[in-house]
Image (cartoon, rainbow, N blue to C red):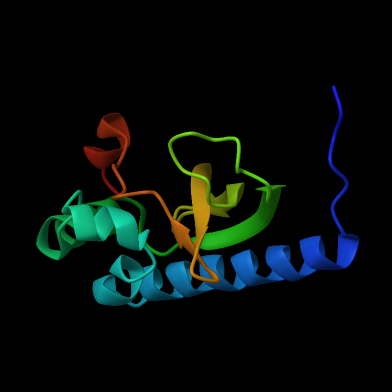
Length: 139
């Protein structure tokens, strides 16, 4: 198996760009700016109607009621810049892992796929679902 070498400076630039987008998402979530979060969803998914702002906003509202503000502790990014062999979607993508704490100081992890579309990174996550056991628990 032959692995293509990627330029380290390109990787660091892409990682910094993804980290900025993740911070924008967290900031929008923490300030109840659902439209800001919605704008960070993959435009292809939005255009296909896979997600609608009203439904998306409802899922974020319920999630925030359960967990409160998100405090990211660590972000790990696995880049896949050469995705041309992918028959379904030839765009560059990244797996992003965000370790975060909720308002009760409990740790959680988001595992997301982000894609690069027309020079910008977008999440493929269409909403957040609170763990049912935790959603019913008192804060």
